[in-house]
Image (cartoon, rainbow, N blue to C red):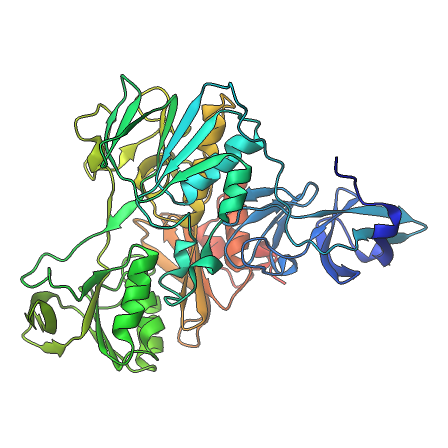
Amino acid sequence: MSMGPTPCDEVTEVVCLESDLQDGQMKEVEVNHHKILLVRNEGKFSAVGGLCTHYGAPLIKGALVGNRVRCPWHGACFNTTTGDIEEYPGLDSLPTYKVKVEAGKVYVTADKQKLTKRVKEMSCRVPGVCHTVLLIGGGPASLQCAETLRQNNYRGRIIMVTKDEQLPLDKTKLSKAMNIEVEKILLRPSDFLQQHGIEVWKEKEVVSVNTEAKTVAFNDGTSQHYDQLLISTGARARAMQCPGAEMENVKLLESYKDAAGIYQMSMGKKAVIIGTSFIGMEVAAYLSDKAASVAVVGKSKFPYQFSLGPDIGKMTMKMLEEKNVKFYMSSGVAEMRGVNGRVKEIVLQNGDVLPADVVIVGIGVIPNSDFLKGSIVEVDSRNAVVVDKFMRTNIPDVFAAGDVASFPLSIREDKRVQIGHWQLAQAHGRVAALNMLNKQTELNSVPFFWTVLLGKSIRYTGYGEGYTDIVFKGNVEERKFLAFYIKGDEVVAAASLNFDPAVSKVAEIIATGKKITKSQAESEDLSWLQLP
């Protein structure tokens, strides 16, 4: 039996005066070298770990609303009373610290052991419990589903099936740091998964699902019975459809192996990137000081023209051009020419010819749902699996989550959407798990996304599709701005660069159900955002 900390393992210090913090304020304090976030809410003080459990951002720079703090970098949210993670990315919660107020002074007690993260208590499999949850896919939705089941005392069998060679990875890193060691991006080590009874079957692909018999068949001829099923197979990169596209140095970025291969093939060579998607642009930025040359071919006039808008697109283009990346915009590929099965040059539709040693294609994604053909699981016209706000498909005991799912977005009157954000995949996995356990929970997450170019992060929250207007604060050309995306009279999304924690503040306002009006966005006075 493990004992709690004894008084000699603890250090108590005065961190401030009671009068130093008003309601709704936070302060970073240090006790015994622990960075601690002290919060005052409704007259009560609480203290939690001061660093986000995702990538270690200082939460003091985040957005505090009530008893919840949102990370300024990637939007993870933590309850400032319990320390529990309430919104993603990240898997772990914050440690909590004892606080007492005496004679106008605030005391915080910390263990001598330095913890920056706290893993929620989890059960494990109990022999004799004959119930199996099968998770198809090895991404964040599956992992979050598995962990949420165990956090809620599920004691049956959990099997995660992935076609990948690795355990679940932080795939957001693959386009930003392509030569990273695999151990550094594992979401959980194998002993953690074993300890909590989460089986992972690698290099195994599902070929069909029989929802009546509750069985799944695999490419190796085996099958597995389930009691409840999660379809979280993600989306695959769309392949090029032009002469020569099948040659061996034409690459898609989907796995760790792909990233490592692209990195090796590009060092000191001529790299051509097709598509100005978020992945394409991140790869171009990453290779800009590693390849001999980098060229980017895009259909629109500017990168991100329809998602972030032409002004931000133009700015990102200039950032990369300063690093000698060449852009060939308003253009497409007519054919790829090569020798001995390897591309040597790319012919554009306007006749331009680009030399190429490696070609990386980033032109969008397709949901991985082909294995459902012949089943009665409903998919939409784009082949995404249709779910309700409880992540349930049209078949009892079959759920779907992540990039493969088409789901109702609560902040847009339940409009059916398919959004490939890491944070949403995790939120989907959690909601699916709770509903598997009959703990009725609706999906209410506000989408949050980030992209990194040359060490600079653009953050984005909301759902901007169909926006009619963009209102800028700051200056896009100076690369310090906040953009509000307007539809009708309402702010439906926001993006920023070097303007933290504005996007996290906007996300929290949207999360509370409040509308941000066009006139608020246009106003010179941004005090409603309560930026520091």
